[in-house]
Length: 178
Image (tube, rainbow, N blue to C red):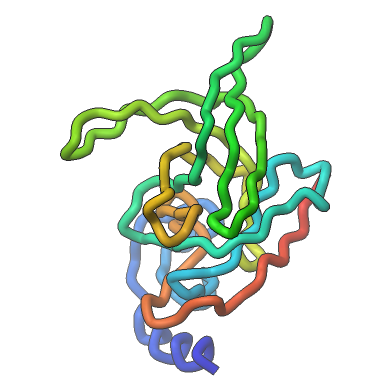
């Protein structure tokens, strides 16, 4: 029901913006984006060849955050002959501990009031509703946050309009190739 009401209210909102992949017209319209609540169940897919290994977890869809982040602890960088890997444990805040080892994409420096912090960036599959992509996450301590996963604008800008009034409006339902 809310999708219909929100879609109707957004029908009048057609604003020209710069064209984005997945939205070649560059218009903001309910036809170009899916509408989600500010909290949605998402699927993390560390290895898309093992769909049974999906981790379904509530996540905060935060249009105020530029990048996505993931609660990680016991972070360790491992150097092999041909690449650097990051070994960590994803703590899902529900008692689940999910050990992962993924290629290190890069390190980023985050400026905070308490000073600079270096964070590691990894890529893994992310499914929100029916939108899937191999997505970049910074690994951070989100132990004091309500949600262990934050999905930022780097994912949302191509796929979603976010309603601050609603939550848990969809389930992860992605078709993943190979």
